[in-house]
Amino acid sequence: MCENEDVAHLRLDGYRNVYVRKRTLDLKIGNSALHLRVQLHMCIQGKDDDNDSNEESSEGEEMPSKPEVKVKEEKSRPKSSRSRQDSMNFDTSLPTTHSYLGDDLEEVRGRTIHDEESKITLPIIQLPGVVLVPGQTIPLHLFHQHTVAMLKGVVDTDKTFGIVAYRYSDDDNSHSMANFGTTAEMFSVKDETDDVTGLASIRIKAKGRQRFQILESRRSTTGVLIATVKILSERVLPDALEGARPPSHCKFCCNPLEQETVVKEAVDRHGNIIKRVSMINNRQIDHLTSAYYTWWPPWVYKMYDPESVVQLVKKELQKWNESYRPEIMPRNPIELSYWIAQNLPLDNDQKLRMLVIDNAIQRLRCAVSIVQKCSSLCCRECGNLIANKNEVFSLSAEGPLGAYVNPGGYVHETMTVYKAKNLTLIGRPSKEHSWFPGYAWTIINCRQCSFHMGWRFTATRKDLVPQKFFGITRSAVVPGIQNADDDEEEEWTPVM
Ligand SMILES: [Zn+2]
Image (cartoon, rainbow, N blue to C red; front, top):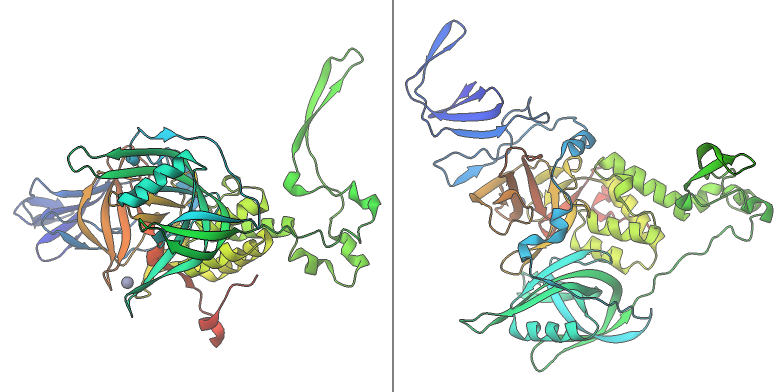
């Protein structure tokens, strides 16, 4: 039990932290008597669970009379994130439905895949702090009248528009648009017109499809940005050892990416099954062995070998955090490279750099390089440590980082972490428009520079696990790069 000027902090069985106003109440602790009078609207914070039972006060204990509360720093505990992830009972498919957008969206069907290297004209939506990658879901809620009209037209044609990141420069108040973007294809849409104001708005769920480079852009007469873009091709590196591999080896080395468990049956002469055995379709010769017939040793080929790079990136991510389970990641190297680009807390420049790379192996090598160096998430403005990499977890089936839109139409790419520190809570928890059904959100700012960091989410039901977590907005943080002894750290760039 601890005390400060007017608040006492004690523990009740089953509850983590209880604050009470000091009054006179006889409370016996051992042989000594303590005078307190408990006020009934005491603030009880979070029921104990397996994860927090031994913990000192955790982040952001709210006091009833204070609108703004300092978030207390907490000790990180060496508890496995896998066991925490296992105890979670939240339905991870809920965030992917973006139910806060309403249940009246209509499905639209039909896909348009543009030829690689082809030049097409696309309407462009610029989003601050959002770099869409292929495969990523993006929700939009738009109010600009001409943009709404443009998108209604897009629904009737190929359902595809472009999303490009832009950024403000505080120095000269200008904003610059990235040269690269990704096509977004609508799969769910609803437009409506307000009866009173007559203003139109549109709600959309779309998926990132193809990368493009902007060749030229112009504003239409209605102010909508239209761009001529080149659809970028995905280069698949040839098998460097193909010419060196003896044909007799080929039937013994199967690609582990295609490795499967096969069920074999032993039957008698009447065809009746005697025994059923499941066998892994295993390779018998390392497919890099044939490197010995070349000038370079196998490890040189291994650096760019799809199978080896996929294994390495999965292993490094698991070391980083066990929430990045291999089973939730795509198996195909191209899909995996985009999944990682979406789910790593990269800053905009790093994410754009990944988007520009034209093959999966280099994207994955870039990811490995970042994962090996990154140790934490820090405030973009002041560098304050916000969360440790071990606290990242997936509350959504799509991974730890997803895009969500607020009622004002602002899209936030948000990363879920169990714990965060050096934060200030702003205002009261609200259930309205919550991206995670069952949780109420409270705004969090950086304690040092007051920059908006995201939200703390607290469960509105006692049976929900986790009881609380943080959603950190990607554009507000940068990966904290581990300090090494040498001075070249400042200019560190990922190896590809
Ligand atoms: Zn800060």
